[in-house]
Image 1 (tube, protein in one colour):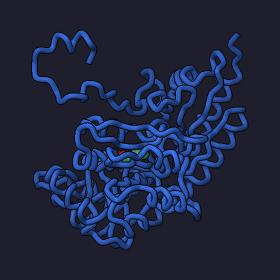
Image 2: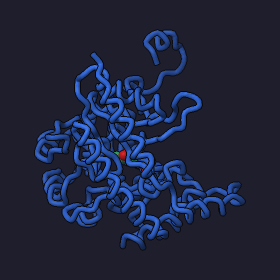
Image 3: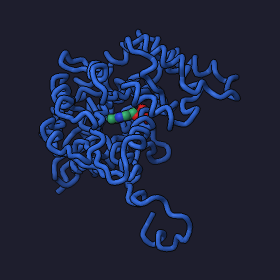
Length: 374
Ligand SMILES: *Cc1c(COP(=O)(O)O)cnc(C)c1O
């Protein structure tokens, strides 16, 4: 809302602070008419969803007049079985975004602090402001969350510490030992939320998605999603695993039917298709390496990533700046993510795509960077 339209508004006003929220701007979805789009702007799955998930979705067509199972019992049991977790300590939601928002709604009073790292996921900031809280952004070192700096920013006003592991948009991660140290330094009344949206992509021995941390503590919640490696972003389905007290709190405030029938069915089928999941992970490992190496070879700085995307720094040179390259790629139908809203003005984020998409991205980048702009 602009200042002038606000002044003219004599109608109801939202709660204090909501007018100050900068709305989340998703990755680009459109190019000029007639241009074929290669969408590498939202970290969606390169391979799309499992055919079995699509079939499960279609099979629910004649059930659409029914309300869904309100607490997603079958899906919670499927998740529990798959990961060895107690289903009573799992809650499902309309994407993990909903669960992140519910967490702030339930645990942040107006005036409380919520801590995140400087280039962490923007949903934490929006959810905190919506709850009337204040977001504290902690400096990072080399675009990695800094455990000691986070701990140094915790005060008696802190209610939640959010950490995406691995983080979006940086692609960096904290090791299991660093996460343990972070948790050990957090007072027991502060909730540690571990957002592991990209966990499946990480193949590092020193990484843990957060299950062990949640299992051994009363103040840790892990969130997961079917939007990324499982390729179901359009259906909106995610889950959280946490202490019974936190999960039962979230159940009280969630919408009574917050996960739709086709979303629950497709998620169960996607979980079951292990072969397809492994294919998606292997595809990403291969092309993450390839795109990172090719982009580095163009003379650009690539932040080492363990997700399905890379963050790339662009030089301060006419025609080669991040914003200019983003526009030049978009003119060729290649949509990537500007990350100015994350305080990363000279960077772009590229999602790993299919083989031909990755080749098209690198070729277009080379052509753009070859041009001299004097
Ligand atoms: C994509 C993403 C999510 C998942 O959002 P959904 O609401 O589940 O689609 C959560 N956290 C991070 C850091 C993400 O990048």
